[in-house]
Amino acid sequence: MTEEQSFYLPHEKQIFEYIKTIEHLKKQNQANPLFTNEIRQLELKLESVQKEIYDGLTAWDRVLISRHPKRPHTIDYVKHIANDFVELFGDRLYGDDTSIIGGFATIDGVKCMLIGQEKGSDTESRVKRNFGMVNPEGFRKAIRLMKLAERFQLPVVSLIDTPGAYPGLEAEQRGQGWAIAHNLREMAALATPIIALVIGEGCSGGALGIGVGDVVGILQHSYYAVISPEGCASILWKDTSKKQEAATALKLNAEQLLELGIVDEVIPEPMGGAHHNPGVVFESVKTFISTQYHILKRIPKELLLEQRYMKFRCMGEFVEASAAGKVS
Image 1 (cartoon, helix red, strand yellow):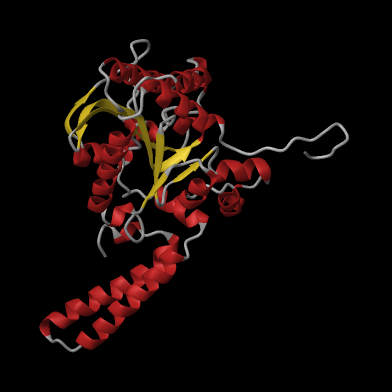
Image 2: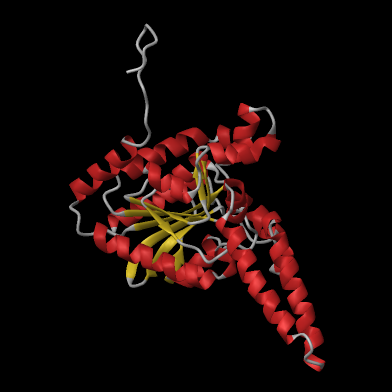
């Protein structure tokens, strides 16, 4: 079994059982080709099983895909879609938050400020990056870089991948809530195009703190929600085991978000998720960023800011009830 197969998700168990059997038969077939027909039949069956399973993914299955340890993270996008990346550090107030990566970059010929949340890929890097959970200094670092982009009239590209802002006492003492609120206000008024893209988890204020964009895209198997399914289940049902029901109720998948007007574009992923063929996803993301920038750069700054403000102001639906209890 390959390293990739050792990370299969619960819904992929049957798929990798077929893969393991096919690989075993191929090894046996090298010395004496007796199983050629059987292998071909199993390969056809595997294709059918893959299509059936991946076409019938539940909301929770797709949350698991967004968290897959082999899924490309911000640092992978920096390596594969950005040229001339110059990383910048610190918030000029407290320190440098390594859960936020940011700096000048060139993407498909577009000079920009590239900012993203980084979870890490192994135990050491995950601890270093705080599992992608941003502290107040991380949000201050992000907005400092965005202001720098505004000064040089460069677009901002924001890659979102976080389970939420860091909820620790120290973060609250350093002004976590204020830092997120400050970013929302400043991004709403930033006089340069902002392109945001959810590449993994987009959870709570941790995601929105760098996610106020003129265009918000999302990868097909990413999710974007006010709270994680586990957090929602613990609040509504006092039972985290109901996380699958919570994932369905939150309507956090890409197609639902597009229908609700929360995101503007869904970027397709290879069958099973971005980790199965990262190269295809890198190219799709590069095209998305380039295409959106060339659209946004034609819009006058005053109109761009008004559209951005109204985009977020008009999200959501509500009903009004009179004192008598009648809904209007």
